[in-house]
Length: 335
Image (cartoon, rainbow, N blue to C red):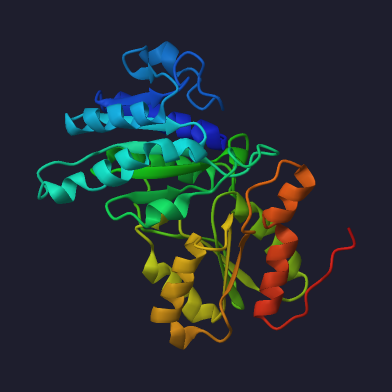
């Protein structure tokens, strides 16, 4: 039994896939000898060298452009965007080139690359280093989108992402790196986890709560407290936003009849809207209460910790959304 952190899981996945396939390499800013700004690639440079860990200038467009070119020539690049906010500098490369090449060449060419996106708040990293942009890429046909919420999921899903023939946007929450992520215990060897298969972290009968990444931890705290009030929550993690496990979510809603969606990204245009639309359009007969979304407020992320905590949904706000779903009054914090 091996216990490892979220960052360890990502590092292990990269190393094991580099051992398995000589075409796999890492490219990004400070990913080599420095081991990455969050230490995720630490130790890999000493083992694989500069030929397979490419340090680049500070240019996200160059990172992604080089990765796409290499993928078109048969390599399997893993490109790191150390702060996902700066993916804006490479949007044309990702959305207009990588995502569309397979379709526009009639299936003759593909772009098998992974873009590792460091996402979310990190404790007063402010407006330009704290965004959650996953829904942008869900909207672009041709991209797969992964949100790994635990150490073992990060390892297994990244293995699948590296082997996938299509471009994969792989979101890693910066506050998960040092911990396990999710409530899982010790794990053994992790095989590739197939895309499109959600995960039930806690079974329940009264309400389904869909959540992922760091918000999963806050949700677990909320539902544990609500269990003492007699509210039984099923916590469902999609793991991959594209492809989405529609059948898994349908089964959960058939059991509970209620849906609350919680994520760190702003509510407006967030992935929760896609989940809500799916439930309304395809699971309406199962619903016994209005769908409720909980997310970040529609404002740039403030620097002050107390304000950051106000913008990002925590256990109290999630718990009150669940209470509202089952017809219970909210609980006002004494803080």
